Length: 274
Image (cartoon, rainbow, N blue to C red; front, side):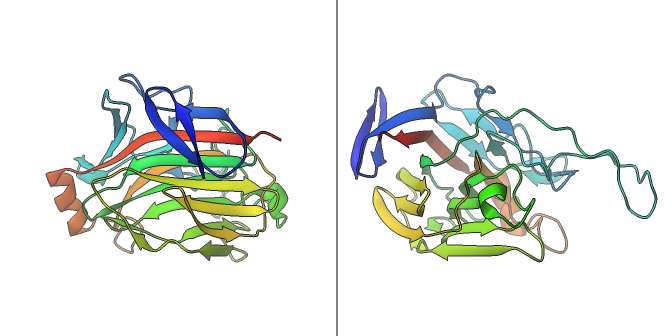
């Protein structure tokens, strides 16, 4: 690995070779840069009642701070994205045709940043308390639209932390989220300090995906490989809402009352200089 210096900020930890920075957010200033990010509020056409647009604040020290909190009786947190998945677009509530069919579909939005290949990196401090989780990942705007992964794209889970101080395996999901869904996964499953920043990266090339944790290679997946421009997400989610009762766990309610944070120092994207 080699370092890439960014003035007044922590350096990047990059794979060997020559690289150029093509997109980044250092989270300077006092307000989230809405030209780079939007809040993900919907999932599979429906507004998610706990994904909120008040869950990220800049702390004035070049950090984006994600929080867990109670709002209108629900336990909420936030997800940021640089683009949009077509399946998430919020659609009409009316059953216009009868029999469960809904029209029209949700309105398309203009993406803020899509990119193909390169090195994707996030430096962050993991959440310290149970009841919610954090992630850094890439998504295709049209994942699952057809069985050709090169066209439809891949979900790349670069970092997922479901428990304080622990990260799961690095996952690639493809062929949509139904009967044809498939996945590949590698390494991960390690414990990390809660008091320090950690760097998570993924090198995406035509030959596959290589994952990195704190500057060290942590596994490779050959493919299938997306050739589709994809977008970045930094997300948090409250535990319990995906379960049968669709309500926050007691751990989540306790953590929301006590307070906790997932802190992101920067997100950067690099292209290799050929």
